[in-house]
Image 1 (tube, rainbow, N blue to C red):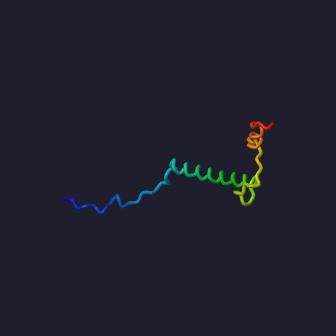
Image 2 (image 1 turned 90 degrees about the vertical axis):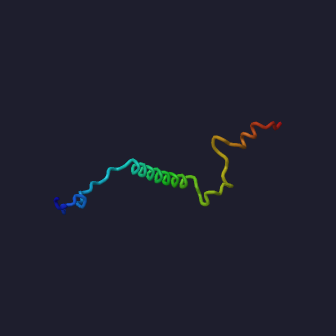
Image 3 (image 1 turned 30 degrees about the vertical axis):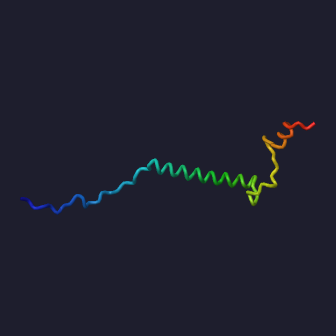
Length: 79
């Protein structure tokens, strides 16, 4: 019977290659870009329309396409 060899192929480290970018990494990057874009757009909206405190709506006047006061005045019978 022959003696076992001292050469062990499992102990030899093969050079590691960089892994390919997976679909999950791409989805993570796209999600990050979408969140950053949403934050920038929200900041721009607050600069345009908002004022501190942003939740204070008592001073807001109803304007635009739907004006509930004008709708009530048109639909009620006031003679």
